[in-house]
Each structure stands twice: as structure tokens, then as C-alpha cells.
Image (cartoon, rainbow, N blue to C red; front, side, top):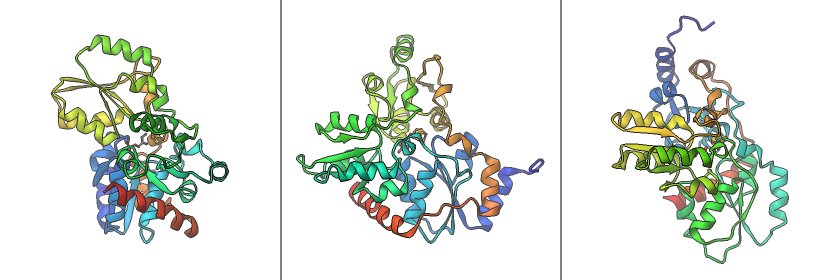
Length: 311
Ligand code: 13P
Ligand code: SF4
């Protein structure tokens, strides 16, 4: 039993002993964000994973993110506190079906959102994150035919923003699809001065009401730079932890779901990682992320293109 174990102190001791780096996404529990060596959006976390000289990467995020770390740094041990930490976008895009979709459109390149399995990345030409997609699209000719998977909301947003007509895979994130337009409008009526910052995984009927659309880090930057005293945040609400730490005098309100609060917008996959499981992962160096070599090499080509085009 872990009763009586000082988890913070033990995680700290093990991190040094193992020469481990703890990387965390903004959707993780506050106590995990607070002890991480680095907290970021998916692009920043990928860059950190590619650059680190640690022997072990303890990835506090979802499985596809830890897989990216392993793909970019195969000589390192990558542990994920809970291997069941998946992603509804990854689930919406099975590799065989994606391969068939590609094969049906041989004149298109496959631009793929990082929220997918290593196998889908291996079938892709270029990976993008929400923070890098626009810059990468600007480097592709306008007449380039593109299939975009798996997030139809994010793909639709970039289609509208860049005037393209990418063919969209019909996937979506259960968390960002849970926001309610009616409840958001009610909240805006209560706080008419509050700008809305939204993640592009939100459906268009939410993005239409947003003053700022961007990745988790872009939302955080906007919230901190905004002169407004109250800001409405339409993404997973754990990111509000960083906002409250950096700007305790401001008020950050999570955009509501149909029940009128933001509790239904917590990512159930991210929530599987706990301090206890992080401690065990560092202690036992398990569970580890493995990617078979042929898949890894192909997926890395698509990820390397993203890192080069986004820099
Ligand atoms: P970011 O790249 O914005 O951190 O997005 C990750 C994610 O899973 C959003 O749901
Ligand atoms: Fe996946 Fe959505 Fe959770 Fe992000 S918030 S990890 S896209 S299920």
C-alpha cells in the first residue's frame, strides 16, 4: 500500500535517481502540473521530448503524446502512468480505415493532427498540432489536395481560416464537443466584457463566439495578456490552474456544457494519470511505451516534417 508515502518527495527522489524528466500537459491535475519539469501544449512537449538528455521521460499526458516522445527519442525509456490514457480522436481513426481513406485519394497528401496513433502517423505525410497547422499550411501550395484527419472541427476551422478545402475525416474530441452554445451565450450575457478563448477542437458553433482560437498554450498566453478581468476559457478546464497561478487577481471561467458548468468538460483520459501512478511508473519504470521500428521510422518522418516546418 502507498499509505504514508510522501508521493511528492518520492517522485522527486526517483526523478533524480533515474535521471528522469517529467513532462506534463496543461490538462493534467494541478499537483502533477506543479511538480513537472515542463508543462506545455503538444508541440512544445514534442520539442522537449526530442531535445531532452534525460534517460527517462515520464509523460503525464495521453498515450499518443507519450508515443510521440518515444518516436522522437527511441533510445530513451518513456513511461506513461496509465496506459489506458487514450484519446477519443485517436479512437475515431483506426489505422486500417485511415489507410483505405488514403488509398482512395491517391492525389491527396495526408496532413494529420498529432492526436492519433503511431500507426496513423506512419500513414501520414506531415503531422500538425493546433499551434503549428497554420504555419505549415502556409508552406503548401493552395492547389495542393489535402486529406485532414482525424478532427473534423479542427480541420474545418483551418479550412475556413485559410480558404482551403481539405477533405476531412469525421472524428471529434468528446471533451470539446461537450460545450453548449446556449449555456455559453448565457454565460456571455452575465459577463459581457469577458473575452472567450477557445481551442480549435471546439465545433464551429462555439468558435463563432470566440475572440481567440488557439492551442492550449496560445489560450494561456491570451488569457494572461488580455487586459480583461474575466476570461471565458473554452477548453479542458485544468489549464485554468496555470492561469490562476500566473494571474491570481483575474477571474477565469470554464465554458459550460449542457449542465451549465464545466465539470463535464474534463478529459476522462487525462484524468487516469495520478500522483500514485506517476510514482509507481518512476519506481518500476513501467508501464513503458513501445513502438515497433518500421512504424516508428515512418511516423518519425512525418513528425520531423512538422518540427522543421513549424520552427
Ligand atoms: P494542444 O496542442 O493545444 O495542447 O492540444 C492537445 C489536446 O489534446 C487538446 O485536446
Ligand atoms: Fe483527446 Fe480530447 Fe482528451 Fe485532448 S481533450 S486528449 S483531444 S479526448
